Image (tube, rainbow, N blue to C red; front, top):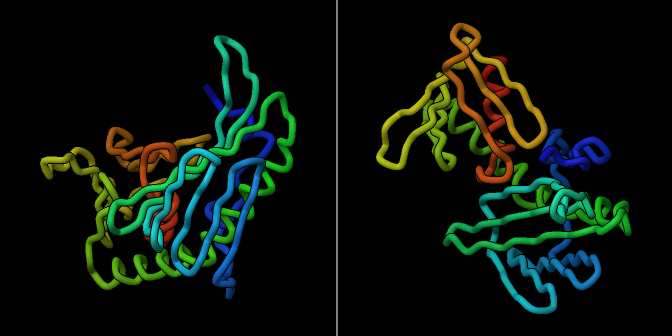
Length: 213
């Protein structure tokens, strides 16, 4: 089901358009109802009143909007955030709005969280990855391997399933997915899904830059 929030609130956070990295404080707290996300130093913790989770300096992120459905009916919307650190500790935050109640507040808090995370952790990480690839290194992002020449989708066994060369590629984003395909042969393509692929935004930004170069 296509999320209505991608129409009402297209993701305009810095995780979908590049912003300048700014100095941020060592402590920050975001609250929406009983949901709390706290940042102290590099430790990010989440407490929804029942479950406590924390990660230390996240290196991977997933985020998206979606709808809440009951049988055939849409009864609300939700904003989902997943973080993972270098030790594979993970944290999941889901903000919900039912029947449009506090929907604007939910979008505002989610935007503030994404802005903060981008400024503190991911802007510099994106720059570092781009520089390493330009210097000739190949980097793995989950099931994707990016070099200066191409992006490859690699299976768990290491077999290359698809490869798209940047000299002949195009990027199209639609709702929760991003399609990267060859303009010479559209059967050569890879597909990013923001719900399942860690760091999908970083992969997309790196690919867009390499396609232009």
